[in-house]
Amino acid sequence: MIGSILFLTASFGPFLRYEIEYRLFVLSGKKYAIDSTNGTTNTGLIQAIFSHSETIFIKPIDSNFDIIIPKIGLNERIIDNVDSNNVQAVEDSLKIGVGRARGTAYPDQYGNMYLFAHSSTNVLSIDRYNAVFTLLRDMKDGDLVYVFYKGKEYTYQIYTQIIVSPNDTKDITFNAPYPQITLQTCDPPGFDINRLLLKAKLI
Image (cartoon, rainbow, N blue to C red):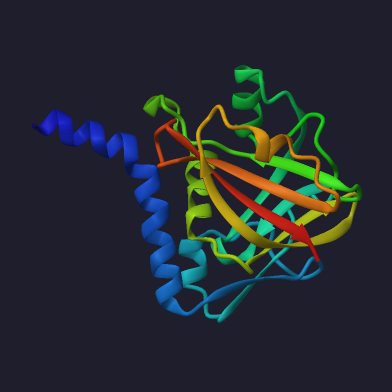
């Protein structure tokens, strides 16, 4: 019994921690906003909760390629040109940021840019990048996503959220006739059963 409890805690602890931190952040009434000149690079949810300021200003970690989602306090480098069919390449990219799939669009191009971080089926390999992306479940239509690319800021607005099977790739390979991004994580957290996709158009 104790062993089972310890196993579950080790397996889902990262997800629960981020979920609890996010709920406390929401209850605190604080919010994140972008200020690329005066912000801090990466203020965690707990730091934000205990900050004296009502608004926590953040700036990209790497303005050459970075993603910021103020609602959930996400601020991570985008690792470019990742072969999404290569498991090792995906895992390596997630150790240092969020992956952009090879062959998908860039922010300054028409088409779909596919960005991913996934929930691992191997509980021993769960890390902060996997856990952070599970907070995508808290995003709603109309929420904003910011991508910094070559020093320029691109603002996207979420317009749909869908759950698909791992074999259903049409929404990832879709060649959009406008600039958009598709964010992906596994669903439910910690399992490789389905994929949660969030689509956002450039505004």
